[in-house]
Length: 177
Image 1: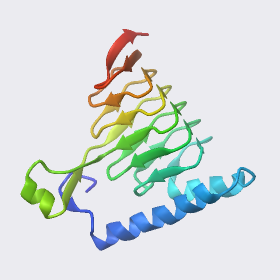
Image 2: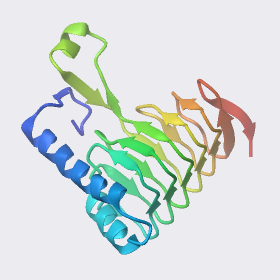
Image 3: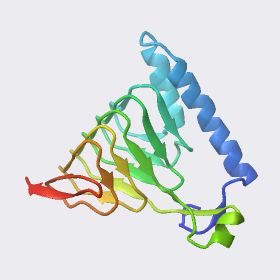
Image 4: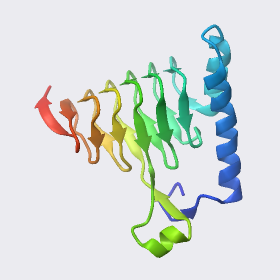
């Protein structure tokens, strides 16, 4: 799965890993604002590869958590989803608006492979000092360059270079910074 090969998502080990993640983010999502130390403990368990100052506003959802790598001072606003079948790398000083969704999972074009339950994935990489507006969808295999801004509601289907403002569906560069 992590090499980008076809895999079966109903594999027992994968199901067990997803159930573990769901238990952790359920506890996180059900916690109160006055339980910040519990939230931080749950996030460290859910996303072990994180820098200092990760802040996620619940609710938050992911597939595994263990395939997410986060730098320092990263903020995810309410209702973010990261389908981390493959590695999702997020640099430092990154801001996510509400309802940002990151997808790494893909399904084969061939209907017979899909019918067998096969899936595959492509990684997502987000550079440091990036701002991603609310409601953005980041598709599998995308890299967003350092210091770039992605406008709210965009669907990012291809790589975005460093130092630009990009927006739209599909997302495209609007301005160099």
